[in-house]
Amino acid sequence: MLYDHAVSTEDKRTFQKIAMIYWAPDAARVHEKMLYSSAKNALKTEVQGITLEMQACDMTEMTIEEVDARIRQIIQN
Image (tube, rainbow, N blue to C red; front, side):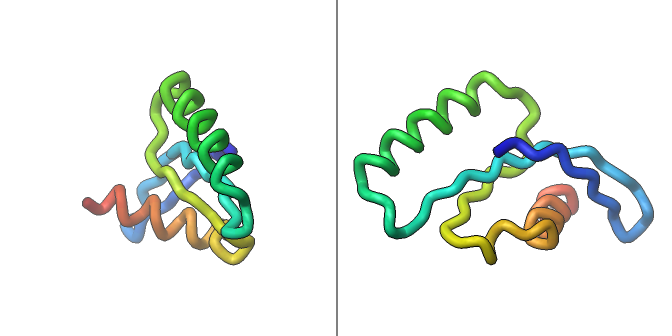
């Protein structure tokens, strides 16, 4: 999933950043994970400006708060 996300910093600056979030459940078979990874890499080469790549194995890892926190970490570095 590609997600265009607005992030505000502590000093009130706002950034639009693209996050690529991909689903890879632990229960998936190795062959499925390999196919998914290949498709993900092909998409990544076609889309420019991806700030964050994030793999999620369960729904708790796919929250807006988690995306926010990870993008803020990238912006601050």
